[in-house]
Length: 513
Image 1: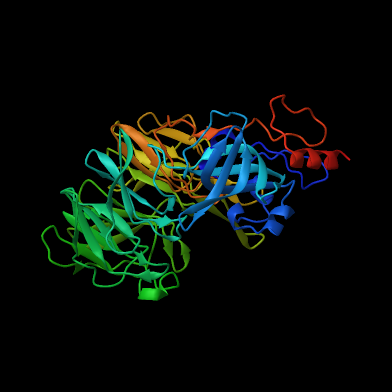
Image 2: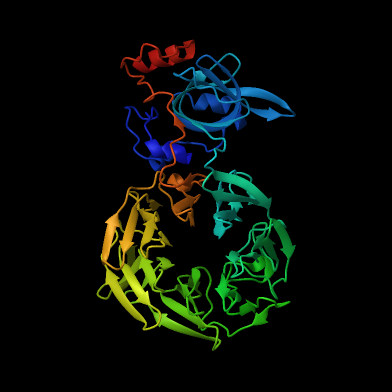
């Protein structure tokens, strides 16, 4: 489902059951889809199987006549319409070639074998000024030139590394450049002198690489490359240079058990990477934050034994790592950020509870908010979040406060779903203020400050679908309502201006009978 459909809520009827029932969420609607293929890939027999059932499809606009929107696919330069969607508003006429998402009910096939759809929502899926050009997961958002750069990640539609680099500013999103090499950088870091480093990562699905590229003044330059293949680790500007730590490597064995303890440092004028003190324990994932005094702190991640519940502090002057506990409760998957005063804000997460009598353990979402002082190693509690969740995104604001956005909450089916909750943390007042929610529930987005506004880009939306939308907390919805609901086929009156066709009438009579 497109993220735009989630903004207004999903309304549909399902006719696969003997009696109609409402669908309240994209997750429930997804359960009704017997196939996740698009209509243009279905043979005629498969389309016939879906008559009367809720479906979702997308295609390129082939034509628009009155209240009929023809969707198709281009083969060899020619377009063939494979789907007809009824539109109540004839003024809605997207440009030919624009991708459109249709979700609704298949009402039959026309004489040409095209599926006739009565949609509940029509979503123009072409990029808008406030949208990324591709749906990508795992993208990096870094400040650059008064705005921010979005780069890396996985192109969900092309099933390939996302090579386009896009710039986000107060005007919207625009193409900036292309990433060199067919890879997904494991880390993107801005050095103290404003140079963007794309470090390591994966080529294809699993192969770890050593590549390093630097971006400044609109141009990419090579290296110096890392001494070994590296991905899934952390990196940050430390001591005037770039520090790279942990992760996994060893080429195509990436993602198995090849945890690394190695730490490398690239000086501001160095021609290569120097080895630094190894980690106390191998670790991957999480985030490495630069502190104001030249140190760095690693929060979160995974060790060979499981989720990491401790923090690692690196002292560049002494070249040492120190492991510190973060409270008595083993909390993992927290959101974190360094505040203006140098303290670390920790929010949400997963709390592991041990049941001594039962000899078992369980985990639940956390609403805890803590402040960690890296100087005195003091952890103090603040009022909790409005919604318990894990993996929230925390962004520090110039006034010393912080904003906690999105994350994952427990779903009704026992799984997880993205959250739209937003909280403002006031450490000085020891207060948590509930803010207006995100337009689209999302987890793992890219977040940056752009012209004193919080830009929230991409992430995973309802149904764990990759998003490409950008929110500044005021992005308008792009949903075009074809009609408020799909018409009831069980005898309820339809609107007077509802389009009719023989296939709809035949199907309606058969249902009533």
